Length: 262
Image 1: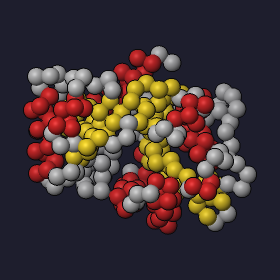
Image 2: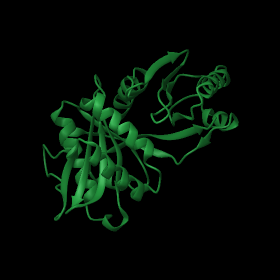
Image 3: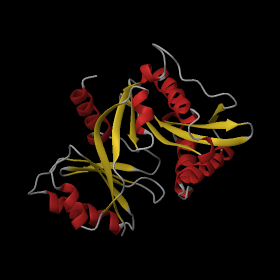
């Protein structure tokens, strides 16, 4: 993989030229910033920027004015290769709070899917099921809350909206041990791009280390490759990064969510 070329393609397709990722959302370019504005349970924030030291302060202030006028908390998704070099420091000075840094990792979907080699199958006793209705979304939410220790209410509403209005852009799956959900994950399929996104992969504590997360990655890779996506993209935590590396993912950059609460 030509890392610089793929990163430039990622920046252009999924950030600068991004399409709205859910119902009720709009994406617009304002000066040197591309932002998405949506409902309170959707993702609100800055996707891309091309700033220098002279323009950064006003651009930051402009986004704060826009989202706070709507009563929205929002995220400035800062990548390590974004400029200017002190943009993170400027965001903190404006009242943003950084969340943990993640690695931007990318792989060829067909390779991870095992189309050209060994396939990662679900461990014994685990069945991977698609999520298509409200009952399935409730199970996804319960796994998310147990795996990450966070409230899944916004995830539930967003996933229900996507399945109802844009079912071709999202695939949600559950790993079931009998009648118990033990892991869940989503695959985002933005139209017109080469990148499918892996999101929300989480496993309840008692099932970690058994290959469930790996199997859900491979399952989603097969879906993405079957729908014509060349690459998989993940914002990887420290916990998932080693697993993804063994599956063939390459680190292209890092990304840090800077969150502003009105």
